[in-house]
Image (cartoon, rainbow, N blue to C red; front, side, top):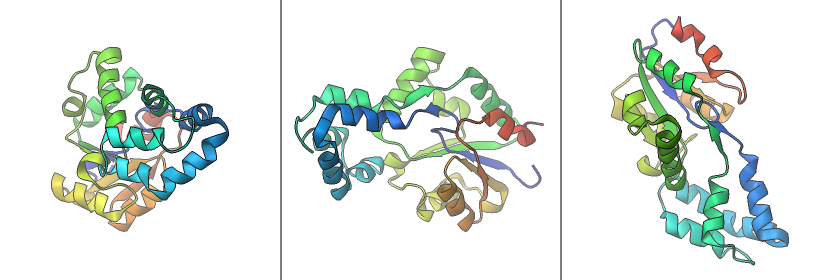
Length: 209
């Protein structure tokens, strides 16, 4: 693509297939009739956003869910449900990233948390025999729980631009959520919406040709 030198990917539902409803279904199973009470308590205390931006530890996060309402589900069960959203990252997407890096700098900006990040690392090793996923396929990886900023806050995009030493006008951002695309465009990055379930290789074909 003309003038584009950098591609910034979201991760979930762009590169890695997810089943997001699995968490809600799993939590309903764990809490039963107290599911709504648990959800209200967790949202009131901003637990999910705090965890996603590194404001609380994994132990504190799991404890917050455990104590949110009866029957106080086992911590192991909570962790299993929390990680149940992941499906797979097909091998051809690694090839796509490798091919893109021949022409562009490739980055990742993802709203993610410590439990999910660790699950992904284990998956990469177990399913694809890749132990250096971030370094091998990206010029830089920006996880919200590590940089303590999340999309669609404009500061998250500004942080990536500054840290990676790239300019917005030479960068494109690929995400599955329109609000995240809109925020990127506010700081001058070209947005490219990827519809979940569609073929990311086809979406990126103009950059691969």
